[in-house]
Amino acid sequence: MRKIDCHVHLVGDGSSGSGCWFRLDTLYHRLQARVMVRGLGIDSKYLKGGLDDVYVETLATLVRESSLDAVVLLAQDIPYNDEGNALAEKAGFYVPNKYLFEVVEKHPDIFIPAVSIHPGRKDAMEEVQRCIDQGARVLKLLPNCLNIDYTEARYIPFLECMARNRMLLLSHTGGEKTLPVMRPEFADPELLRSPLECGVAVIAAHSAGRSGIFDADYTDTLLMLFKEFPHCYGDNSALCSLNRARTLPKILTEEAMPRIIHGSDYPVPIMGSGPWMNGVISWKDYRRCRKISNVIERDYQLKRAMGFSEDTFTQMDRLLGQLN
Image 1 (cartoon, rainbow, N blue to C red):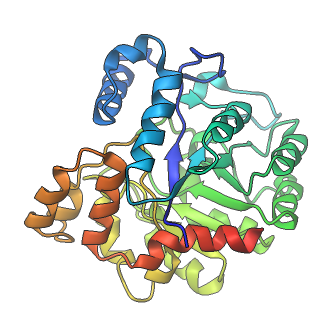
Image 2 (cartoon, rainbow, N blue to C red):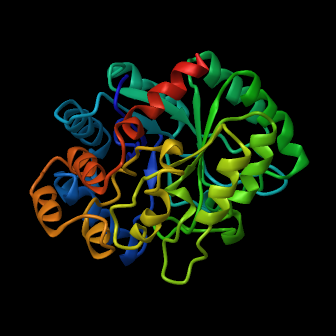
Image 3 (spheres, rainbow, N blue to C red):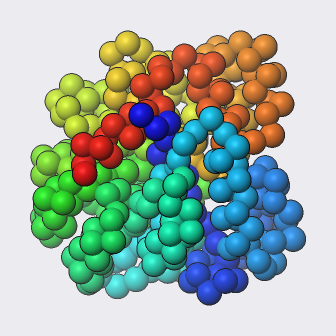
């Protein structure tokens, strides 16, 4: 079985004609972008142009030089209102599915496409079928950021189409501080009940834990869904961070572990301080992992030091095999 990171973001500036963009219109956004690209080993000068190509090639090199075999690469849609009209001004960044497929075609051995389609788009059904026909078996959404309530009846045909075509849903759960949030209440994994009941296999990104200090912790709700739905999973993406590491003790259990899938949330910084401060890894392991310059490998080694089983790293390949 391949070792796969199920949660890696594709990001670009549109410099290659990709159609990608991200916001740098506030001091917060500019500082955030600088921290992220420097953490990846990318010169911050590329924030002024040329990021498309350098981002992809840097990521490809990191994956090939890591202990992993492949990563699930994520597109990113924008929010839509209830009438199906785009709300680009509410989004933090955008990565079109067309560009995602172009990037995957260049590195098919290590990149697995995860498309992003807001189910409220007027062309949602056509777009999801087009992506399925191109080989996509994973769809990524952030309901709290994109204004998506899975329980709405108008989304059922979209979810049923996913289920018929054995398409996996990777859905953000829990708090969010990196991107603008439209509907904080949509962070609750209880909303995943609708796609689960439609027969869609679901991965709850971040295992529904907190991001901010005062965020609600929904991890217990997710653990209850695990008991009810055998096709419900969680990932451990971004749990190396100081703010999200509080989720770790709840999923590092014999009962929860078989449902946890490895993910990094690249390019979100991978530090390791959170797991150490929460007593999940030793000072020795923290210091050892901090010296690893390859952030994909650093995240992998930190997760191993935390005690995640080998199945955690191969679970995504197992799921993809079941979908084919």
